[in-house]
Length: 110
Image 1 (cartoon, rainbow, N blue to C red):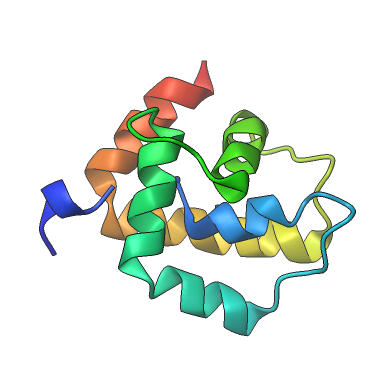
Image 2 (spheres, one colour):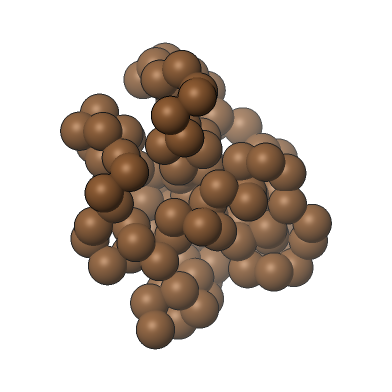
């Protein structure tokens, strides 16, 4: 995996999971999350959005809204399933996109 071709999210929700926190959206299944995490182009889009390096789709917009809450360990809008999926996604991003993760933490933790 080339770092210059891999960018966020922080997270496929990371982005998929974060997008789900809206009450008008159905829950994201663990299978759908796994598919999103395996879609490198999707992850790259969401990471670039989260870092302000590219335009955001609706998922990316939601990610940017919830990222500060998630990074602080509290997401009052998230269900327990969403919280678990978000943690899984963040862990995935930390392991697989360490440079982008460091940028996201700097950008959103303050």
